Length: 401
Image (cartoon, rainbow, N blue to C red):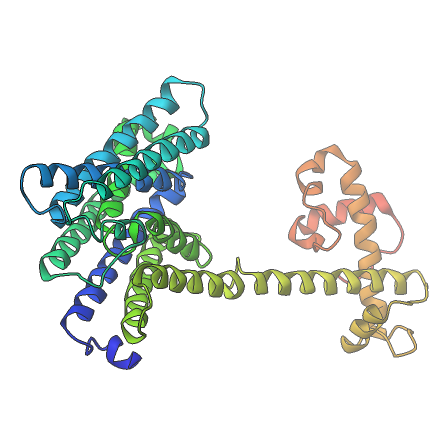
C-alpha cells in the first residue's frame, strides 16, 4: 500500500495531494531558511494565525454576495489580506513602540486568532449550511481536494519558489548582516518586508494542506534540520527545500496509505523525523558527533597527563590513562615508561615549560591565547622562536621536536 502511494498509484486525488504537498514543502523549506537565518522564525507564527480572520471574512462576504463560501481562491485571497494586515501591524509595533519583537508577535497572534475564533462562531450561527469544513483551515484538510484546488496550491508554491530564487542574494545578505547590506545601498526594510511577504504567501498556500497552525512547523523544522548538516547558507537553502519537499511527499504518501490519518499532522511528524535523525547523526553538529568529540578530547587529556606523570616519575593510578599509554606503546602494564614513552614524556614536560615562558611574555600574547594544555607548540611558534624560548629556559636542548 505504501509503495503504491510513493509511486502515485493510489488514485487521482492522492496523487494531487502528494504533488501539492511536495511543492508546498519545497517552497516552505526554502522560504523558512531565510526567516531562520534572520532569527525571526516566530514571525511565521504570527502570520499564520493572522490568516484566520481573513478566511472567515472572505467566507461571509462570498455568502453575502450569493456565491459559494467555500471557494478556495476567495478564501486564500481573504487570508492573504488578513495576513498582510497582521504583518503590517507587527512591523508597526516593533518600529514605533517599545515592545520587543516577541511581545509584538504574541500580541498580533493572540488578537488575530481570537478574532478568527469569534468569526468562526458567528459563521456557525448563520444557518447558511455552507460553512462545513471551514475549520479544516486550522489543521489542514485534503480529503476533499479538487483539481482546481491542487492547481491553485501548485501554482502558488511554484511562484513563491521562483520569487525566492530571484531574490536569494539580497535576502541572504540581509539575513546575515543587515547593517552591511544597508551600507551597500540595499533597501533593507523593503527586502525584509518582501521576505515576510513570501512567508505569508507560503502560509496562505499551505492552509489547505497543513492548516494555519501546522504551517509554522513546515516553515521552521526543515531549515533547522538543514543547518545541522552544513555551514554554508546556499546549502542550507538547498537542503531546507529538499527536506521540506521530502516531508510533504512522504507525509502525503503515509496519509494516503493508512486510513483516517490526517495529512497535515503526518507531514509535520515526518519533518520532525528528519530533524531527529539530523539532531543525532549530523557529522559536525549532531549529538553523536559531539559525544565522540568529547571522548576524543577526554582521551587526549588523559594521554597528556599520563606523559607528564611519566616525565616526573609519578605513579599512574587512573586506569584509562594507563590503558591509553599501553596501547600507544608508551608504557608497560605496570606503569613503567618504554623508550618511546620516555622520549614523548620528556617532550611533553619540555613543552609545558615552553608554554610557561610564552604565557609570561607579553610579546607572545597572541600565541599564549591559544594555550589549552593539548596544542602542540610547533603549531604556534616557528623553530627559531622555539630555540629562543629554550635558550631562556636553559637545561637540556636535545629534547625531540
